[in-house]
Amino acid sequence: MSTEVNSQPPIAWRYCGSQIKMWRAGAGVGRDALAKEAGYDYEYVKSMENGRRRPTLRLLQIADQVCGAGGKLVAAQEYLKPEPFPTFSQDFIRYESEAISLSTYEPLLIPGLLQTEDTARSLLKAHWPPLDDETVEERVTARLKRQDLLTKQTRSFSFVIGESALRNKVGGAEAHSSQLRHLLTVSQQRNVTVQVLPVVGAHPGLNGPLVLLETPEHEHVGYEEGQTAGVLYSDPNRVSIATQRHAMILRLALSLSESAPFIGKVAEGQ
Image (cartoon, rainbow, N blue to C red):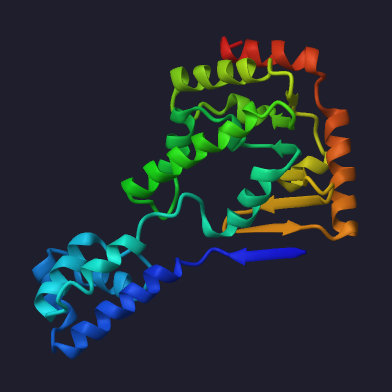
């Protein structure tokens, strides 16, 4: 199994946009006229009709009215709710939910399973192109819900976090200090370990984040995520390479007894 999915707009956006365009053309309504009636500019309506943006409820309501769709366009709203996770990460999320062990290395970010609400919201609001408020809140809720996995005590979770992530004050100094204290609290759970990879010069972790999972069937799976795509794989050769790299990262990381005091000092601004 090897899956690579490019980040594309959801098919529901594209289908709904196409329907608006078809109803508009059938009714002889120009895009300029629809945009003016809805209070949007031409390019904004064009991006929704072409599926690059999620059609808003207002556009659906106005298009339904001026095109005489009889409620057919407004009915699409039910299928346009924001996705709780980016399209390219959904396969990984399914594997994560069942994994009996999960080992995560993140050089620049606090891992999603360990983020506070303030951190998650700040990161999602920094997304570019910008996400609408509804999508931000849907994804914050979904990210926090994922953290229920940590309460499953028969599953093990290992996190190695780069020093840069600990020093980047996402959400401001107070929110970040709270985030670091949260790391210390979670690390006290029997099934969770949190280690710090200090700045150590050249090392294999500079190639980016990495997650290793073990399924209930004892299949080993790797996951790597970039700017616009995620790759989930179980090919033995690739998993072996990822496992070796993760092992080296662990060797370079501070021990458990060293990591907690390090996080505490950063939280105190030292």
